[in-house]
Amino acid sequence: MEVEVKLRLADAAAHAALAAALQPSYRTTHQQENYFFDGVGGELSSRRVVLRVRFYDVDKKALVTVKGKQVLQDGIGRSPEEEEAVDPAAARAFLTDPAKLLALGIPVVESLKSSTGVSELVCLGGFNNTRQEFEWHGHLLELDETKFDWGTLYELECETAEPEKLRGELEAYLTRLGVAHSHSATSKFANFRNRTLL
Image (cartoon, rainbow, N blue to C red; front, side, top):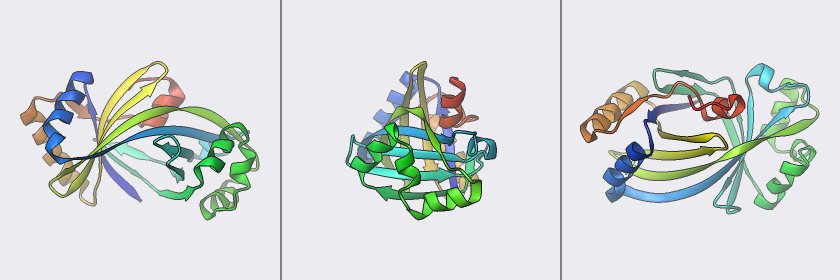
């Protein structure tokens, strides 16, 4: 189960202000490409299952991820998640020939096939995300700038075993900085599917 605090930043200025404040604890930046797949009959979306292939820094790394039904409430997201690293060059072929993803034979995909009955995939497209990572009081903060064809969203995420406690600490920190924020109410994938910026 993945548990994350997810806080939406108001705009580019809020994003820049937070990045500047966190700069002393900066670790790295990743350019992420995210692509999503569904069964030709909607076998995955009808079960609120998300199948994603994510590329890091062009082709340095690729992950296949399956997320179950996500509950996102009061800035805390919870969803079952499984992922597995795959060869980036092989993963690029999934975008034009999704059958290769189904035939890959890795446990996360085999489990998906048996649980949903999906036998043919279509690529839904995707979006790009720039993720900056920072150390903050023993936590790894992920500061995202997500670019859709119809606009850009800014978000702060952090995985934690104590989401309510961390959410309060992060909100207090953002308030002290004067960084306008709110609880994320919609996932990146939902915004992608619905062409929204919520």
